[in-house]
Image (tube, rainbow, N blue to C red; front, side):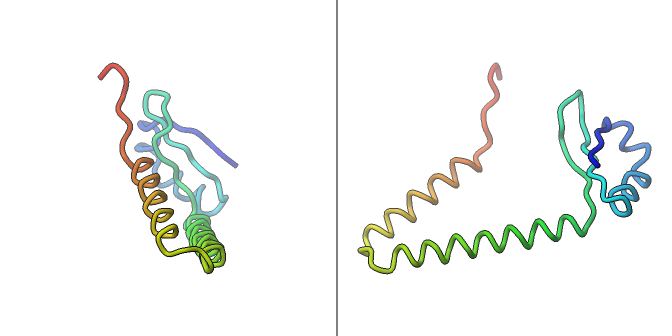
Amino acid sequence: MEKTVGAFEARRSLGKLIEEAYYKKDAIIIERSGRPMAVIVSIEDYQTWQRLAKEQVFTLLETAQRRSQDAPVAKVERDVRAALADLRREKRPRKRSGA
């Protein structure tokens, strides 16, 4: 189950929320001023997500390796540089409008 609580309530009842995440497998979304800021999840869920993310990375790498086996080295290097540039752009914090 998913549940949303305000930051003040989360501070007041952190222990209870941790138990709900761990024992009931609830995901608790913590909001501040009506904006979702963080989530409390069970350690099992978190570890599962981490494992799945790693598996996806390895699958993508294997696919890329198969596709690039016969490709010219210069093309592969260009593709890698372009992919890295895309990732770096995604990681940059977005500027807020009106700031």
